[in-house]
Image (cartoon, rainbow, N blue to C red; front, side, top):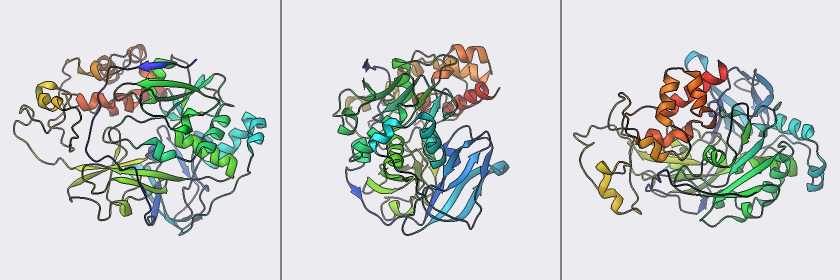
Length: 454
């Protein structure tokens, strides 16, 4: 049965630099990178390629020894030119010098009627070998779904409420057939329901409104209304022992293309956003693209921060860095490497803050677009009990007590306080409004790893 969820808690961060609804063609970058760091829980990656090897799009390049059936594949065809490692030889990127024309590994094609008669085991084997399985993320823990498990439900959020989030109608327009085919495949894995959650007030794209084999739920409210974790909490909560799978619309479409066209298609549309972008717009590219060509002659100043993703949960990258696997957005904002005396106490109309004591004047114009930088305006200190976390957390969870339980490594309290229901993005707003300046998302991941691996 469909549900209508109206959220009141949260906070919309209205920033300058939203992408114009125009998809521009640019010369594709020379390099693309597959980033295992986009996936949590890959503890023992095993490389299947060396520098100098030639690959096609869809060629397996690595797997996790813990789950050797799940293949991670090359997004484009070309030569593996660099394998980047970090501290303790942690695998960071597999960099590919791309061919001018992408060649793909071919898989068996299926018609719509074939998909109907396909068994779960057959579909699963194809998805595991092709590299599309990694789109499925398992809750709790936010890791790649275990193919040996069956979820009680599957969740798809059909809108994004993060700052400067790309328009899903622009990203996925024209993929109705593939999205439906992907849903038909996913239905084979869930004994219960596939929940497709749309915005309850905005106009809904036909790709979602006409979808079959899914329950259409409506969600309204400020960010984090678009977070799938918040939607799960209000529609089909996770208890200890439960397993829920999540997947974004791009992943559903990629699965649909695999079965209908017989290829691993890593093409995607990415939004270049942010106040420091001269012409924020959308670009056609592939998973793991270098941002070098997107930002060329398109940035207003030199002292900026490039982020793969959004300002709340994204990853800092260099000006020739590569986009993360799940990201459809690149954000460029000013670098906040300066000191502002008494900046925390001066009332202003130009600074965005959830705290009205600081940004009271900014609340007078709710439609104002703000320019924010990376300055945290303070350093970490002891937790201050302000009750502000609860105002931006639209879940029946006590964030401050949960964070303290994680820091104390109190497993019983972590479970009782709802750690199974969240991942980092669900508490990113808490980090934004935290007067104590803690790295809340890192603390949440620390707790999830403690619970999962202890």
